[in-house]
Length: 256
Length: 256
Image 1 (cartoon, rainbow over the protein chains, first blue to last red):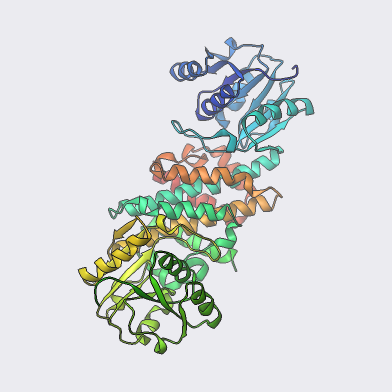
Image 2: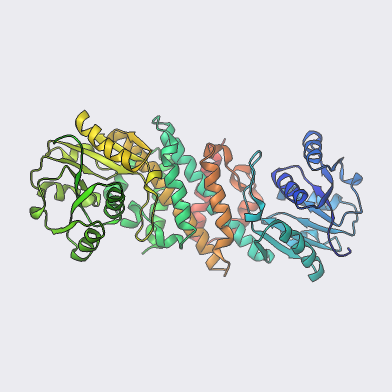
């Protein structure tokens, strides 16, 4: 490992691999190669950032300054075990895998962009928090320099702290989206346009990001409006009802 | 009831009464009076739109073109019963009260702004959907004209449809905000700044309002990533765990 990072190898062909490589390329880093199993995707992603597509870990370059492993947590142990020895810094991009899963390397770290990425959707990387951890101060400084090229929001976060943020992210992203899905289902089953609810959804998140969410809670649960709660329950399907009851109870407990 | 609405009486001194009166005033309607029980609030709200504060329903004007009852659903039957006879159109602003709760009047309707209002927070009324219903086409046209002065998003919606939207709103607003609250609690209990999650929260709602929410679901539940789910559960308190398990199961059922 030597000083400033210039050449980067990307391992993976999912959404994080794609969005991250594009952002790095735009900031002037050289994406040397894309290493993947999916020939088509690997070639397509590589072509778009003028990198080489490489199939098979045994064929990857040993000369890159940084190796970014952007694959699912489940596949991480196997890929790490199969990688060749390298002198560059090896990082993973996972919210929940520990730092030391990479301990077979000399220089390693975590480079976790805390955002939800989807295919075909452009996100402004400069708004995305990047959470950094590494096995040595030198490695941490080197990957922090990379992160700072992409975003103003960089954080030094331990494995334990990252795990907590990852759980919190499930609530504020995955579960929130599922609440939107149920709202959408209710509208669809009564031929009502879901976009009537869009302004409410947008204002809800604006409020919760400009004050403490608990302080802006509204609705029948916090008002303990039993009449409305009963009316709502009578209109829901069984599984929606179960969610409505549990969350109503928990809102009331939280605000007691 | 005669033609175009110019003079308006507001009954109530909550957030909807305040936001709505301000928006109407800004569009050139004359807010004649604010009728409330809370002397201080009624006077304060009235003063800000150059209206008269009126304490007691028996003292309200009988000459207004429109009476907007913006109070809690629970208080609605009592207020309706106590109001004097009036010739103007009487509307309520409730998402779940039926139209015919106002049937003792000659001209009546519903004027429901589908948004979450908080004290001290300005919302752009032109972005807010207003759901309209009335007992006659003439009354409906008259209140629709008022709604169109405030917003581009007006809808003619029946009581039954409005009830469904109100239930859906609980999911996409109140329950979503509670998910944010739990995320905030997890951060707070580990001294992590909640604003690390803000970009994720904003992107989550942007995605769900630009595609069908089900189509952009991400996270361990939909991937059936049992390892991450188990790890998350081990980090949660009992009541958070119950919510995590139920929503994980429901996400998996929904996407099977």
